[in-house]
Image (cartoon, rainbow, N blue to C red; front, side):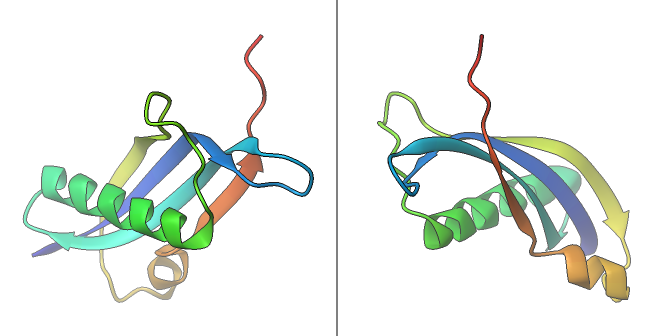
Length: 99
């Protein structure tokens, strides 16, 4: 098995905010062990979806689901400190309305 560091971005995540539901976006990184690149991407997306669902209540209608895009995949040594530290991060941002 090979270790991969998968960087992703998510968009269109409708969540409860202080005053009303708002769309948010996020960036996330996952460290996964997989037999190949495609498997690594699939595992990373699945784990990120689960982590997001645990962190926030997603209010999207099924006709307007959130999306996750793979930004970058790197083969890495899993034992490095920096890789371990970044491997479970999710950073939330406000989603800017489309013009």
